[in-house]
Length: 605
Ligand SMILES: [Zn+2]
Image 1 (spheres, rainbow, N blue to C red):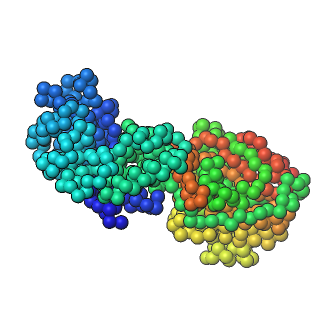
Image 2 (image 1 turned 180 degrees about the vertical axis):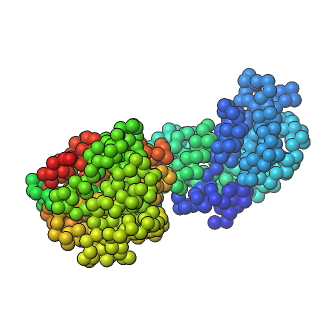
Image 3 (image 1 turned 30 degrees about the vertical axis):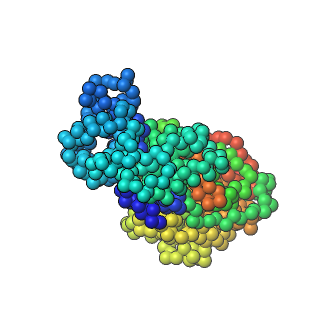
């Protein structure tokens, strides 16, 4: 670990980045972003500096005593000097106390004659004592450099880029080396897509390890500039990732921890008997499970993280739902919940109302006239848009008090969810026997029962919620089944959506796996009862999630996100039990309601 500590000291790597690297990749990779040829950016210096690059490169050329920022003499433009583009802005940043609290390197790549240019630079820096003396700022000379043997003659604020692997640790010059840089193209022709070949990987690794063994940070230049390459280089422990896209690269690398899931929970996969699956057999009970925001990438991630399968992926009747609402290409949970609960598409934010704001009967209300009992379980607050669509009728999802009051007139015999405080007017709950324990639900002899999982929001499964969604599902099925009447149960895995909104991969995938544990309870009951139809779908996709990379052996998955919002991507629907094949195909989310009623031989209202 000693040389790693040295690296840390030498480049003053930010501790947080350093630790994040350790956490994600299991070994050291302080991922600093190096803005290659930064003077060619639309806005030199500020773009990279504001974007979070810890190292910025400027080529300089000395002509008539002026240090121009340019690649070659023929490209010199009057006014574009290292002073105007870098020293003045950096001085400004220091004066205004902007972004100078973390280590920052200016890599000055000399294109004209080494010694005279460096001397001119030192003369110019006489004007900038704040830059020279700032402990967080390193000025590193690259490109044409004076002989290595002369390094120690230069002022203490001048450091050098060492572009060799020859061991010079026993010379006085070594202390003047800020980092080791090498041309990536001398080792590999990788284009930054897919993976390095095993042969190139070994060579690249050997170089990085050698540089680290010298106790200096390492940079490759001429690397491929893709997300795949940034991640691979970070994972290999390259300390400065060379890029022409400093802001996007910094955002990508800095969000890797949040976007990478390391599996810690597991859903024990149940293998269904398929005895009644797709059979034309009378259906008695219906269980509808809604994963909020559970799109195909979310399901794929949960599947891969769970060792390649879920109980959900055992099912054979699969379709796709189109989710748009009447007033928006992209639905919210209220309009989607209402479409699933009532068979009517409506406007975003509506709970159980049509576009003319008239109440529409939801499944529990329709089925109550046919002797069914209904129940509702959610890991959201009970007044959340999805559960509310199955008992309330209000113009806007934010009307929490009015939604809560609707529970009193609802057809629910059972509820489990968070947000007890939303029901503070006690008479709302008069008809329900409130149970303290989830386990009491299954053995309760009462007609109408409820259990609150939290006073406010329910915890995430990674925050220690425990296996309560599956436990609630199992006990609620037992309660409803004990009444000797047909039943309808809606179960919402609510937090997949929440974490997708935060672009948090661990939360999203663990909630998806947790949701599968509830699915397992429903499928087990379907096999036991022989007359239960189970439907699993989502209200919409959230996050625009893709899963570009991962590691199956390590059960590690990287997510990438295109939005903090919902998307209009179609969502999968799975079904199991008699007539489950009716759910195959591609159709509108509002059709789910009609399909359920058709199968139950009940006319739509
Ligand atoms: Zn949402």
